Amino acid sequence: MCERFAIPDQMTAEREFLPRLVWWKFDEKFNVAPPQYVPAIRMHDGQSEAVMMRWGFIPAWAEGKPAGNHARRVSADRIERSNTYRAAWLEGQRCILPLAGYYEWQLTPAGHRQPHFVRVNDRPVFGVAGIWDRSVRDEDDVIESCAVICVPANELLKDIATTGQRMPAILKRKDYEAWLTCTPAAAKAILQPYRSDWMQAYPVSPRINSVTAEDAGLIAPLP
Image (tube, rainbow, N blue to C red; front, top):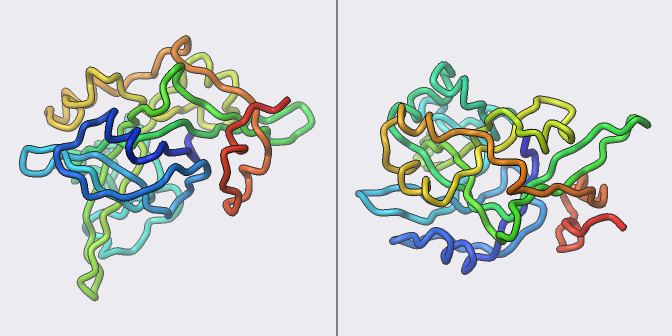
């Protein structure tokens, strides 16, 4: 369900997505959690724009008040029916989040939640579909925030995820531009489970359960 994820270094992300306007600034991270700010690609005045956004969606009408941790993600099948996301969806406020991978937890027979790192084969970065909005607080502070869009899990993730049976909507490279520019109806058709044979998942250290942990060892396979 994508509760935590890893992001690549900035140059790797820029080589993958080739944004026309670059405003973001970030380092490689291995334990990103809400409400941290994360890199995102969106369209602005007909050009792709690289910005930082708060992970944890705040709709425009909320006047900057967070909706809680559940706003970190939204299922593709409810995005049009949700009061939280519907307006942003219909306005075409879609974005792409650059990920190096993300974490999923599997319930073991002993009752423990074993974390797994999930990534795309032979790729240091891939794009995940997101939705964003801009909300203004009483003090005129502007917050731009986003949520990950999820789709039904593929066979690989069904074997790991014990709750939700969902996975982030990983985009194919050929769909990057369409996702940012097409109509809501066409965008909805892009949201499909990613192929299992194009991905891998393996157990990692339970240190990822602490939001204070931040090092490359978090994505290393367990011996």
